[in-house]
Image 1 (cartoon, one colour):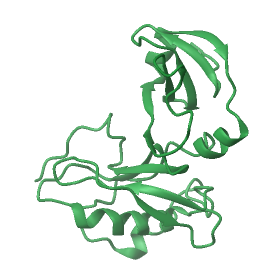
Image 2 (cartoon, helix red, strand yellow):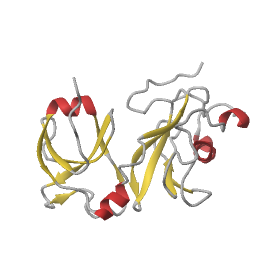
Image 3 (cartoon, helix red, strand yellow):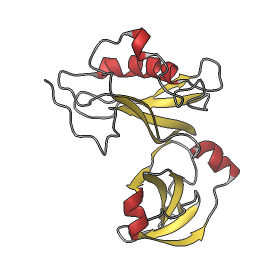
Length: 207
């Protein structure tokens, strides 16, 4: 069965949610969205300031439970802030672990076409490391070396430096990966985890 055409800016009613949702990002697996706040008569992220972690829903669930209400296209400013064109997941590697030493010649080698020089078309992003008890640590701002975009090796180097200080004895992840989580100070924000997104991956226990 073909997937429904879901467009950024579409407003939906979803059976499991009390208020309308507005799509701010979508790929083949996930729908990321904002919610309507009746008490403010506005979308929750309307002001675009501060830190926002996107609400998200599996696309299959969303398609089965939603009804399109109208289109409310993102403004040029909203598009520049939310950056729905950026990948939701990248730098996923099963052959690496945050909990082990990395062989730089292997860890930072470009393996696929997707891991190109311009894997992430943003001049700066926030990375959110996880703590030893699965808590999110404060986001860390990183800037692209060429001030235009990040390659996968460049992202992995930065992510490794950001994550390693917060590791504990228990392995919470298997592999490594970087995933879209929201915005902070109008800059894209990504969380660090294993080779599968946090909502999909089982806990990787220490051997």
